[in-house]
Length: 199
Image 1 (cartoon, rainbow, N blue to C red):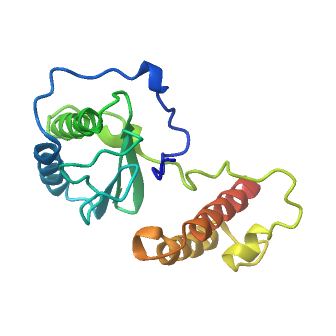
Image 2: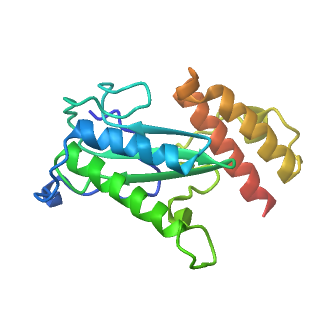
């Protein structure tokens, strides 16, 4: 069973359709160094890699001999308060998926240095929607705690209050900060539900 927290809404590649990339020569160790350098150049608020087991460095990037059952790789980062993620599982080898992510980040960052102007950031495709992963509503859960109680706000709280309180609750419950994954997910779902009710 994979411990990989694949971003909600990102499709998975069926194992039978994964193809090895024979043109990548860089090792896992070289690619993790390259990716760490790239993220440093992006100057984001925080970032973290993730694989399907805990055979990782403190930043979540895989150790040189990591070989999880799930070869997928996810890279998440926060920049100016916005959350981003890119993920790849196109290859049956972790090394290739890691290299694909590095190449995408590098190429996208390089585009941002060109004098060409677009309507949005080059990284817009990687921006996660607020409350990412919110479709995990359990069918028939009539005893579920109301969203405003999960967040600890008034049922008629404004969008700004909901977002502010949810941001603080997500920071304190985030698994990377020692929080509980299930509680973190509940907070995200409650925020999404309350914001959808406002629209």
